[in-house]
Length: 153
Image 1 (tube, rainbow, N blue to C red):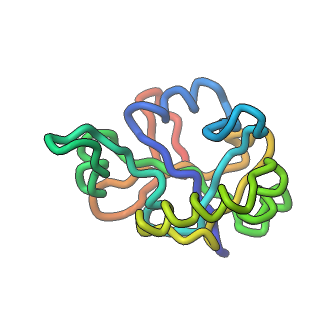
Image 2: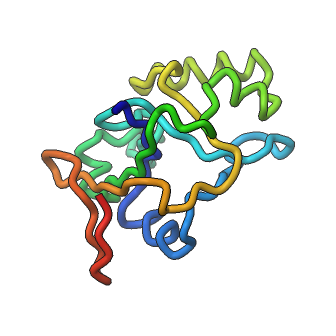
């Protein structure tokens, strides 16, 4: 079964998501855009999920190894045929993203090693009961086991 993934940081965002009980839509775009929960078909990591840091020469993108070491990497997975998923183009239409802005976002994504054909979104909360949670252990994606003994995977 093909899966899509919502990638996040294990040490920062994951505890907040677990406390909330759901993946909640985020409005990272313009104020007028409806918030969405983003997913990717990328199986190792979604390039647009990588954090930027301020380096000696200005902002720079972390490497995957740096991202893993500093923030940890986690993902929530859904079957790619989930009826709630919208394709990238449909999600842009839903959110009112202009074609010019869409092309700019696609260009930035490609520069980060991502592919817009892999991008999907859901408009609305995604209960954690609907997804599989994993963390990257340095070699592979493995089931997540929290300090409270809750296991996902």
